[in-house]
Length: 320
Length: 287
Figure 1 (cartoon, each protein chain N blue to C red):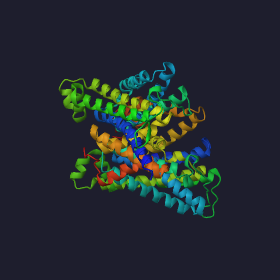
Figure 2 (figure 1 turned 45 degrees about the horizontal axis):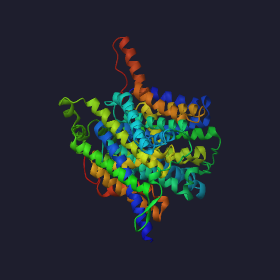
Figure 3 (figure 1 turned 90 degrees about the horizontal axis):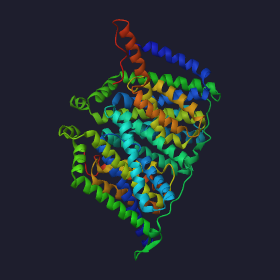
Figure 4 (figure 1 turned 90 degrees about the vertical axis):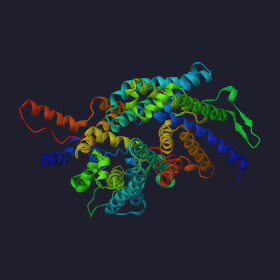
């Protein structure tokens, strides 16, 4: 993390400029998705746990907090806290079953349990609205401040994003973060060193779920609706894609990935109703030709430049 | 409760359960031999149904269609393995997942473009229309046929894997890939064959399902999750386990549909969660 100040400056500049470059709603969505990606990256990039069920926590939090905002008029702070708690608790439930298996079983279980939550939301129409989603989510004032204008809400979300990024940075640099990376590198060895690997994986799951929950509530308040898709597996796949395209295993990877993904999907979705086809093609192309994502391509570029300019330190601490 | 209704629901559960087992076995072979997560398995199932529909439109013979449609899916499987999966064997599950997930989006959207975004229906062949009196209840012939056909296919898969040389190689591939290639067997050909076989099984499950549930582009989504459930409960490469797991969730689903239809899909995953709560390593505790 030697280049950290530079990265923070770049992110602050992006936060300041983005709403004037793209539509404010899209700019807001980018940072929300980045929070979502930060949570997944703790699992995928730092612990080596490939979860294909992150929408479970995102969607559950969005539904519960959305319901409370809509029918019980709770405050934004309470809604966010409850959302984070719902994300963490649902992740604890799902994680408890998943961390006992590894590898491909783990991936399949996260997906299958995601489907369980999805079909529950799909059928429980009296509460969730089923296929139509749960509309009419309000965006109440925060400490007397009106956040109804897109720019005000953008500022609030951007602030929470920066906070999330800082918290995540502290987590991955903490002893827990180091243990997670140790598990990623060599699970048996971490176990042999006396760490309770399943419990630590579960801890990562819960933290990742909390981030997803926060993102879910912000998403519901951004669009004023909790769409059924927010708990669906496509959403889980999208965040995996965004994190990979940015470069998993680096703190800023999901941030870059979210930027690329939201911008990409917003531009193609307005072009053609069958845009998931283009998204699928993009997945295949990235996987076949651009593995390692933007961050690694960037690091490779700098390493290449350094190599051509004489002796210099190697590139950034690249992913895996 | 009406006993005849209960009986026919159990039969329904057994018929869909056999289809689930078929999906699970196909996925198990792919996942076990190639060591990849196949998120396109559901889309391949849907493609099998649509190919059956089209061959029926062209030729009008159900039996020919029932053979050609899965073979078409298998052929696509060969192309996918060769062009997409092969470069990724060393790339890690994350990229393999993204590739197969991307392929499933492409296949689903392709179905919408080529066929139609709205659902379609497919009638069973004349021979299998109508019902048959089982004494307790009147039951559709086609569903009995599906039960029988799926059972025969599972038996065929079992005979292939247990009794033939190629099946032995495939099982060995699930156990220890390095040893297989050390023995001088072309592991790449094995991978292609295993992927194609898994695709054929998904395709035939889709083709058999079409006259029961009709067709829609997203019909594979539930099936993907169910196939995962079967594999998670049964363990990779465990055929008998796949049948038990498939029938378990199939019957549970159709019984719940009787009392609480809204929960009938979610219950599949709830059954899995309940089993894993008691037995984290699955029904048979493999790996």
